[in-house]
Amino acid sequence: MSPDESGHGGSAVKVLGDDTLKIIAHELVESVRNNATIDWTLKESVQAKMRVAVKRILRKYGYPPDMQAKATETVLEQAELYADKWAI
Image: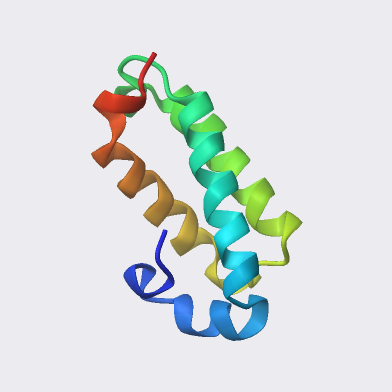
């Protein structure tokens, strides 16, 4: 997830720094990839599990709370672009 793509990354970069955001992005990709299943985009339970995992990672690194909801939705939207490649 690029900070500029999320539309809110400017202050996240200021708070966390580029290196921390890179670590967060890497963990988010791994988490979403590991949770992706066939038709996960249609299964609310899998999407909910992914949201929880994303929020947990964001909190772990002190991502600004007021920006977590938007970042979570952005991660899931971007994950949908890779859904066919990641689904097991």
